[in-house]
Every structure is written in structure tokens, then in C-alpha cells.
Length: 80
Length: 209
Image 1 (cartoon, one colour):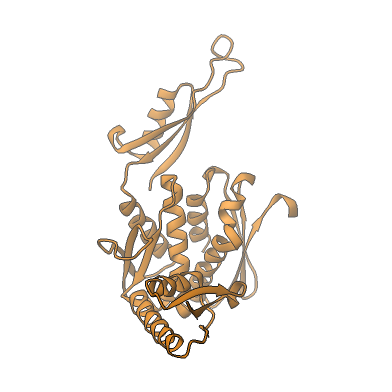
Image 2: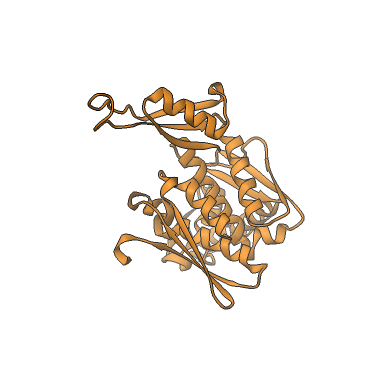
């Protein structure tokens, strides 16, 4: 799961070396947090959230096999 | 696509180091100088390193096939990505197809997974080439069949509008589906189409001209 999100995010941004993905397993669910360079935030979210929603859909599909719920969030400067 | 950013004391050094790391010959690589670097005092202090970006020379289609395959692998799907030959759809640049055992999982509910895959492959290939590249991704003919039934529905509705002279509202559809219908009906001189509503409720209206 983490590898899937990491590959996609690294491929979308201009600063792949500044991508950090954190996976926190919980009970019956997984939280994935994405951290990228400030100027790359928009590339990961996309217009009207198109990109991040597509990432969420694929993560959910991949998690479906393990019968787990998955939550994918982008950490941006404002909320840190 | 193999790509890397590499720093070095000089551009030449950064290029040599980068090629070694990605395992590419110079002829197979595209090299962009990010920073020439600056020599420091006595060549040691206050200097700035040179930085280059190295990427594999690939065609757009090859890159798209590779990106799609990587995503399928990482999703744990037994499926193969392939180029689907010449582009037959308006507005698309590359057509890909997915073959394999688990096409139901590749497609997802109402085609949502397949559409998400298409959005991501298009965005990644666009980033790789620094220009907008639209990639169409199908799985075992699912999208073709889906589009054909959309077009059938739209043509029937258009016929009703022509006969009754009254507007007809189609069910809410995604942007991609609305585009398919719009393109299918745009040749008509009797009816016209426009969109109404926001987000998931956005739908096409067929109206007499």
C-alpha cells in the first residue's frame, strides 16, 4: 500500500527526494500520510482534488484485499 | 521512466554519477542541467554544487505502458499493460489496454478504479514530458462497451427531443462521460447540448436548436 502511494506521488512531483510517506496501521484501518515539498502540494491534490481522490480510490482497491479501510491524507504546511 | 536528480562538483561529474546510479548509457539518457554550480574560494569554500536531471529516453507510449504496469503491479493485480494501437478517440493521445485475470478489480464499481488509473497515468506521463498528454485506459473492452451504451442512450434521447421539441435531462454523469455524449451529438443541426448542476449532480441537457 505504502509502496503504491509512494510510487505515484514520487512520479507526480518535481522534488521526489522530498517525498515522505508515513503508514500508520490501526485496528481494521490504515492511515497514510503524504508529505511533499510545498510547491508540489498542488500536483498531488490536483484540480478539485482529482489526483488525491484517484490515489485514494487505488489505495482503497489495494486495501480491499486485506479487508481494511484506508485513509489517505496530504499534510500541507497550514495544518502542520 | 528512470529518472534522477544528481549533484556534483561540476556538471560532468554530476552527469557521470547520475548515469551510474540509474544504470543508463549516455546515449539512452536525456540530460537537463538544473544548476551549473559555482566555484568557491580556492575551489573549496562557498561554492555551489552543479545539479543535473537525468531521465531515460523513452517515447510517450512506452512511458505510459511502463507507468501503468508499475501501478498494476503495486496494486497486487495479475494484469498486463499494453499499447492498444492507433488512437481512435477524439482528444486522446495514447490508448492503453489492460489484460489479465482480475479485470473486475481493475475496473472497480462503475469503472471508478479504471478512471482513477487513467487520471494518474495521464498526469505522470504529462509530468515526465512537460506537456499535457491524454492517456485513455481500457480493460478488456469495458470502456468501449460502456461508451457505446452511453452513445446509444444519448441518440435515443436526442431523437425524442427532435420529435417533441422539448428539452431532455440525462442522468448525472462524470466529466468523461458527458464529453463522450457531447461529442456524439455535436454534429446534429436540430439539437444542442449543455451542462447543468454541480459536482456529482452535473448532467447534460439535450435541447432543440
